[in-house]
Image 1 (cartoon, helix red, strand yellow):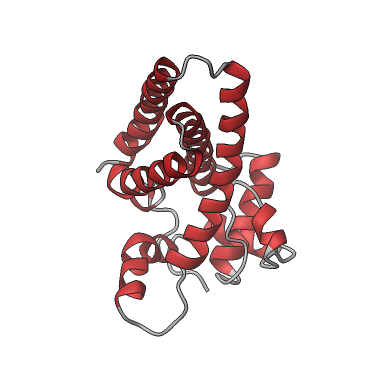
Image 2: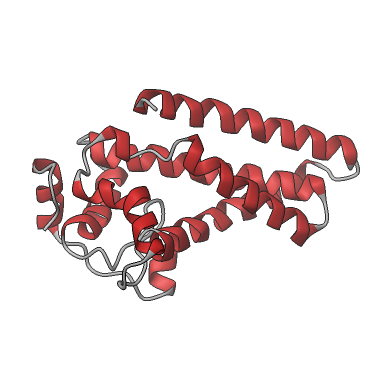
Length: 200
């Protein structure tokens, strides 16, 4: 799928899906008010940061040893490390993002026992995912300054210095919690902005 279509899909489809889920949940459980939905949506954003970290660390960078897990990781993420500026490899796209979304929603529904709570939390998860897509795309395709530059330094350390650290793209929270944070190298940012091939 064309990277522009992937970007459009994510930023159109997920808000529509979130709105439909929220509407269905509140229609079924009207007693749950806006504050409850906001609280669950906020928790969903936090859940997203953990999901992002766990997927990146354990699915996209599995322990060495070969086998099906490593082949899957290479197909889903390894190409992005080899050609980090290729826009076709930056965004997740529906084939990669919809199945995990369905699984996460199922877990939220089972965990909360409430359609409206699960819908609101899922809306937060998708909000975090959209933030991830935008930040990740911006890191690799622009020279923006400020906060994005800090994210870029962090992420390019992962790409060009040590792919065993800095798994959080939108937030370093879980890297701090699980001790996979390092002081980002300034040389990593320079390398990432000038090279498009294999990382060192």
